[in-house]
Structure formats: structure tokens, C-alpha cells
Image (cartoon, rainbow, N blue to C red; front, side, top):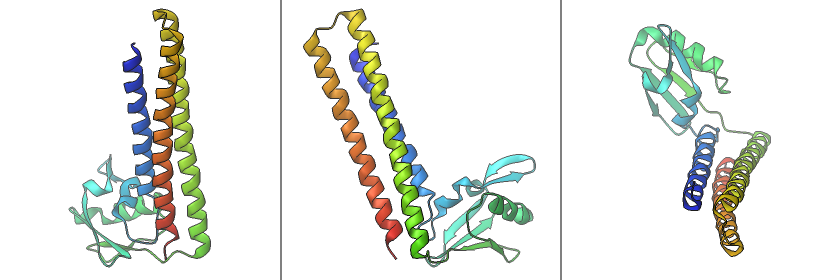
Length: 186
């Protein structure tokens, strides 16, 4: 592996860590109806675990309510069971045609709990990025030994690795701050 491949590979992994964080944040409840919260819901559809959003139309009714209209009305009970099993923190209400999920406004205490979860999730993402940095540094040491890289070249690559790490840690901080603000907004 060359040093350039190592840098590209590391950056790709850091990008994946940030994308995983964004996906995780999308499923965190903020008091507003967000269809992404249903990404965790998997329905047993004739013995096949199927994501809910593939088998129904999901729409936001009034900012506080999600309406789930399954394409196959015969599986409404299965969808309800799957939603309860997914522990969304919201009880589904079915009228036999559609299922409604009404998001109650979050209490101040619950907002603070969610904010703590956001910080913890962001910190986990930063740890992942730092672990990638450590792996890149280890790879650099291997390349240094095998290719007899000069000391100043090694230092340049260490600087590049650190700049890359700083860039992604900053992105994680920005995403986290944005999500915290969204959670704390009443």
C-alpha cells in the first residue's frame, strides 16, 4: 500500500463514520414527526423481514403525526406489532386503513436526556475517527520501514493524517451541535 492509498482509505473510513453518525441522528426523536424514525422498524412479511418504509407510504400529516398507509392492508396488525417491538416510544393508532403515530411534545427533562444521547453518540463517532487515525499511523510506520521513507516525508504524512482527523472531528462537532439545537428547540 502506498501512502496516498493509505490517506484515501483513511478518509473514506472517516467519511463512513460521519455518515453512520448522520444516520443514527436521523432516527433520534426530536418532537417533530420524522419518517426516518421508522428505519428501525422491520415487519415480518410472510416470513421475510421487510423494512416498513418499503411496504407502506409514510407521510407527515401536521408536523406532529406520521401516517403509515401499507400497500397491503392485510398486514396492518403485523406492522403494529413490529412498531411496538421496535420501541419507538410512541404507541401506534390504527383505524383499520392507516396507522397514525402522534409525537407528543417532548418535556424539558426528556430533551436533556436526548441531548446527552446525542453527545454520547457524537463522542463515539469521534472515537471511531481517532481509531482510524491510529490505524493510519500504524500503516504509515509499516510503509516507512518497507519503503525507507525519509523522516521529513513521514512527518508530512503524520501532519496530513492529523489534519484529516481534525477535519472530521470538526464535522462531527458541527453535526452534533445542530442536532442538539434541534432537540432543545421547543
